[in-house]
Image (cartoon, rainbow, N blue to C red; front, side, top):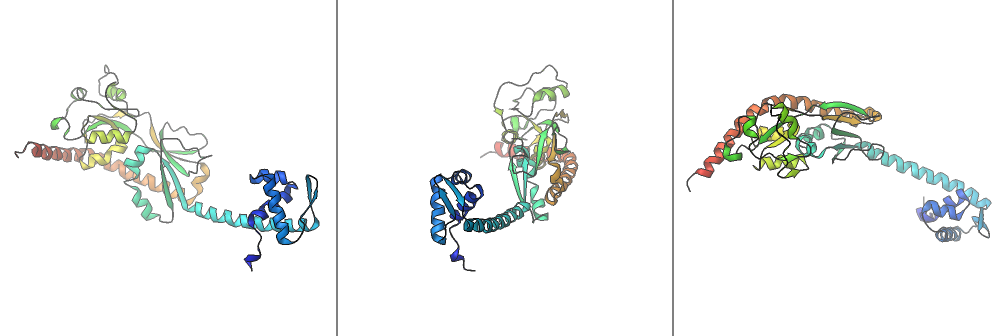
Length: 325
């Protein structure tokens, strides 16, 4: 095969489109070029081949018999090229697993655990899209998503992944290490605010029905940033257990009470129904639910152990601050 004998691909594409429409103008519209460009490419092709492909009659054109035979062969060759390209791209896409995840949940829950999935399934090229925007499966290149909501996702496969609760946390060194022991003491200290975690439902659960939602202080739009502010000792944060567990385990945060605030939202695993038939989505779904089962067990132990570790951190920090130079 002597590929040097091939004509320019752009000229061949222009010819195929013009032959199919028997119109240079329609071919130009399809290829997003000008009428003159199509005419020029076809004249160059005819000159290169040494044959007349179109008979011109004013502004109208029609294929010659030679042009008609050549058009059929060109169309078959371009179709084979398109099929080969489509198969190649499809094969690459089948290796990609694209999952959309809420930003705070991605940072505080998924990322610390995702290494085990990558090690277990090296055949999948995982892409985590960290975003608070809802995935549009009809438009976006997304295979599955983890969403924090009410569970109403018409037309989609949706499974409850993890129920959620809220509770207050702070750094072990907050307020000089003198942490509140009761809800009444807690509300006298700086309470940090977030659009996602509202204090009002927790006040009700704690028997503080007369208190209103805090209106002063910094308002954090991202729950992960709110948690970081609490770690830095800026105040008391009302947080979700799903994103606070790791910090409680390490002692960087302390859970202040055993009172849980109810959450109207829960975490759901969602995807288009047909994607549940794919091996990559099933693998991710099974891994995810297995991790949630481990998380539930760890959480029950974390608050007690985290409180002990937090007390140790607070004591060591305060001793360092008060030690003579």
